[in-house]
Amino acid sequence: MSDIDYGKITRDGLWKNNPALVQVLGMCPLLAVSGSVVNAMALGAATIGVLALSNIAVSLIRNSTTDAVRLPIFVMIIAAFTTCIEFLMNAFTHELYLILGIFIPLITTNCIVLGRAESFASKHSLPAAALDGFMMGAGFTAVLVALGAIRELIGTGGIFANMHLLFGDIALNWHLQLIPEYKGFLVAILPPGAFLVLGLLMALKNIIDAQQAAKAAARKQKVAAGSRRVRTTGAIS
Amino acid sequence: MALLNVTSPHLHKPGNTGAFMRQVIYATVPGIAVLTHFFGWGTLINTVLAVLTALACEAAILKIRQKPIAFYLNDYSAVVTALLLALAIPPSSPWWLTVVGTSFAIVVAKHLYGGLGMNPFNPAMIGYVLLLISFPKEMTTWLPASGVTASTEALNLLQSLQLVFTGQISGVDAFSGATPLDTFRTYAGQPEVLDTNAVLHGLMAGYGWEWVNVAFLLGGIYLIWRRIITWHIPVAMLAAIFFLSGFFNTAVDADNYGSILFHLLSGGTMLGAFFIATDPVTAATSAKGKLVYGAGIGILVYVIRSWGGYPDAVAFSVLLMNLAAPTIDYYTQPRTYGHSKPNKGLAKRS
Image (cartoon, rainbow over all chains, first blue to last red; front, side):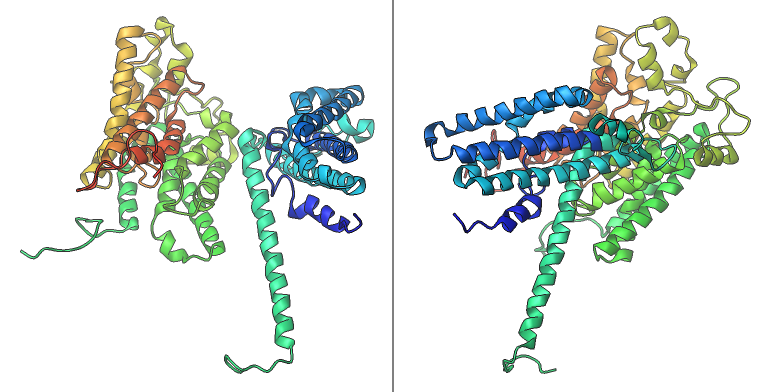
């Protein structure tokens, strides 16, 4: 298959078919772990890893699995990679591992991972599947981090707290308290805030898409107006 | 006699949203007066702040949505939302609390759902709950009612302004006091404290708050008399509280469960029953539906007050029953003349 459009795969994952904003998959970790930037980045990175690796593995064995057993096999593969990532996080970012808790093993059941394995990786060659897994994960992570940043900012008046848990001692003073003596707008940190901000992000994406579509339509119009066809109907200006 | 052949609604007199909403505003006057008497000018300052914020937010959103601004501002619905929210939050609360709550109520709870008539949840109560879960300390700090002890006086205008805009009063150290519901909750099961605590012993129920509730009751009766609201929701809600508190207070344990009058005349009971639960947009519509809806709110208020995590529960109860209102409407649709009952039992496929 040489007619794979890698640009389209990238655009799909990051924007047009974004797993969080358009497919609305993987809501459980998205809503639960996006309370701060550091949590969001850590879970996002873990999800990218699992998605890309499982897509690669599924793509490699796609011709030797039969339809009847494909789902259990996919889940086994995903669970194996999730376990690897979990051990890695336990070893290198132990405190984050404790904070994220159940949501790391839960990546196994994240609909995005199984969804991409089933609908994309099992039908495409290795490079396409790898790119798709990575881009879908990146799109998910982007939304996760945006959500985390907005919620942390509104909820605590600052951003990038505890980043050293992920990046080590270099990040010890990355925390920016933008508004001193902020009272703490708790609702943004609590679950309702996740739903509210996610809804607003989806609305923002729709606004941008609508504007892009209007611009594209306007461009088309201009070309039509500039054509040399003789107008036979309508008002003559 | 000529037979008029017109379609519903068959109104007795002309009216518009603005006229109805203005009647609601007039009906809150006794309540505002009593709150001001017991807690100082904070209530009025909150009201002014909330109304200004609501009008500004409403105008801004209407502009963005390209709707006629003057037309919608004239329906007074934003003013009523702001007023109800301002009456619910403590008079000692800082100015930004009122502004945040009101703008969230108007922008998110009302306009993001499509504006007046489209919102599934009572905007004032959404604003209140947002503040309550975000700023629990500010939202549960009430002033002591004036006269509860010999030395307690209501704040004067200057002190109230200081408290709202700077968070402290020069020359005064302590100015917070628990409400009767708070006090009862804290000391439930300790009759020796309950019997002597002045906060709990006004003329009929909790000191100060009994008159606040009586004032809102009078305003509510005015609304029923002017046919702005019907009797169904308040009566059902108050009856539910009456029977539940009566049963638990007399038959179960008087030290752990407050008396009937205590529950009817404490916290937001009357304000909730007549002004908040009766919001025509978010409540159930048919007479039978309103009875179910009101009783549901009353039961929830009593349950949350007695066994829940918060001292008062009108806002949560109203929001929960808002959620149930479409289902209640579905099962309580009145029978149309000449047709069989529309919906019975589980939803049928047709």
